[in-house]
Amino acid sequence: MSIEAKNLGGGYTGKRVVKKINLALQDGEWLSLIGANGSGKSTLLKLMSRLLLPQEGTVLLDGVEIHNLPASLVAQKLALLPQQQTIPSGLTVWQLVALGRTPHQPWWQWQLNSEDRTKVDKALLLTRMEGFSERPVEQLSGGEKQRAFLALALAQNPQILLLDEPTTYLDVRYQLELLELLKRLNQEQGLTIITVLHDVNLAARYSSRIALLSQGIVFDLGTPELVLTPANLADVLGIEAAILQTPVGLQICPLSSCI
Image 1 (tube, helix red, strand yellow):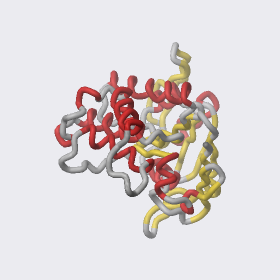
Image 2: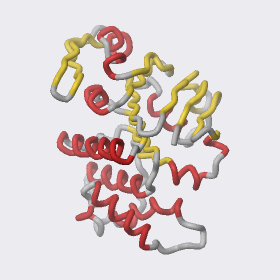
Image 3: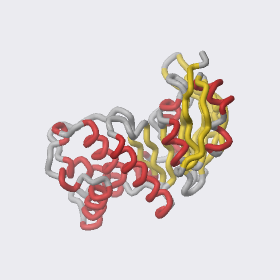
Image 4: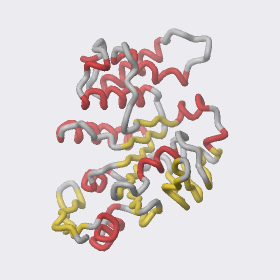
């Protein structure tokens, strides 16, 4: 399952945030979008997930323009974990995660079948939320809500997963647990992943490739080793940094602001 942006541009009423974006992902690739605040990372993710209509260009899902596909078909192949989630009132965690099976059900089917229930239970287990299944969603902590919505996305059984700042509200332990889970799904199941990550070191550690965004364009695109150079970090993030080789690969040590 491939996803591709071709000459993609868009944003909000009267304002174009990203422009002339060209990038393509193949099966099992993990791309992270990084850049300064306001560089267009979240807007690009919304355009690629069909939440925003492009002002120019197109997004192709397996070679077909994504905005020409039925929403239910897109949801069977692609799942999005947004930065801000709407909390449905009165739902338990299990009921929330079960909503992930909706795209796979015919319109006349109201009850989950055994396969659906298995997918929901597996998603809860993967995200370590099985002990919260009967807890009302509004009673969860920020980090627990984040994991519950990740379970919802995984219950869709997508081939492509898009995540906007998925480590928000999570302490260091759960950040690593979540990203290690995504890495396992990426490697073992061939799940294609696009993440917006604020932490450059987490992006360097887990991504196949990095798209460095600046003022709405792709400033550089490639492996972490090729993209995360002192010159690029100074130009795009405004920092002087040392590039370190560590047991988990390339990592960035910020030294000072160069603005």
